Image (cartoon, rainbow, N blue to C red; front, side, top):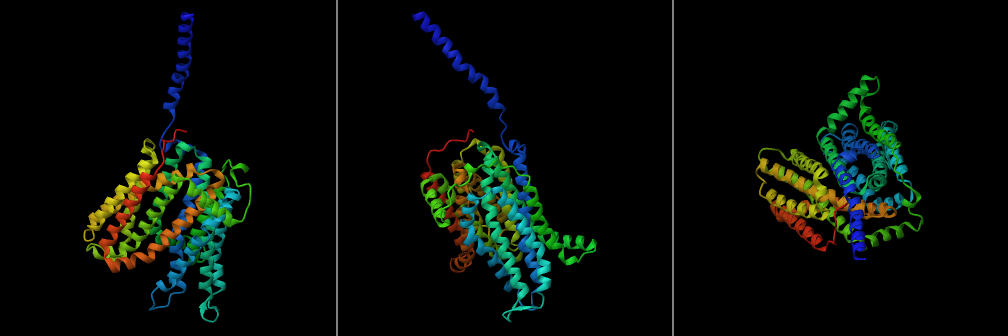
Length: 460
């Protein structure tokens, strides 16, 4: 009996160990980093749509400024009198409709939302030359230029459609990318976003001028090339996304359709219960608030730095974008070795130290560029893993609501600092405001680190 028991246990040990030895080579064969994401044809289609859609988004405001300068600006008066209402028309839908759009994204086909939102934005932008031509020299209420009012209306519509596109785009990524590949997928998205942001700031105007010349060489009016470029980019994005296969099923959509406000409240309650998603959202809101404040503070910093002028503040912002893009690329290849919480806490500490260094660099261009580059790099350590956490932790039928709330909160976070930063700087000084931002980032990072539940690395 004892001999048979020994034999049985020996054979049982063999049967237990054998599958592990067979599985070991397969585990090592699992590719990491960007490779599996770039081999995913469905992600490549979505990525292509993102490139054209976000290029159009980044250049759209440059397009409106060019239209204002050529059609509405009165000599001797600052262009900001016209640019400010356009900026407001672009911002209001983000605040009003961000959460509501997310509710309907959960109810509708996400692919349809992506395609239709891009095609409609393209049609609106391509219609601008005709709309402005029909409205030329006409007034609204005998006081306002009808053409300018219509430009504001088109801007409002384009921004409203963007509120539907943004949560649908984020909700599709977990449908087409495996959970273990979400971090490199978001890294690639962040890298692309920052590259397009730099392109929009740096070469948006030359791109529009080139489009005007190209369209003029075709025998068409040369002043409509700008609209062709932006509207055409939206249309290309919509057409590309027609080929997207999301694999979405009815189970991935919300089955019941209560009142939209109830859906929004359900999303808020979900954030209250899920600590990881809530902590990730808080860190993203703080991160975007800091960056929005820095957009305002960068103008004053550029004015203080002897080597550049105030209107060259975009150099500092571009350095931030470069740092974020490089860091996002590194995270995509190496970030899976760490948990999302570890990455974000390291990012919070890094952003804090970079802001402290930036407060000491208000008279030195090279030190300011180094600090802003580092700040962008560490910001990616917060942004990429926190976005990945929200995607991986949120169930399919809640993603639209959660991403809608995120979109809404982030847009409010982007708007408030634009109002408060200049006032705070005037009252407390540039260096003090930057240091206070460093303190806020560190405290939020510390709180969310100690509030985090147990987190394991993603294995599947």
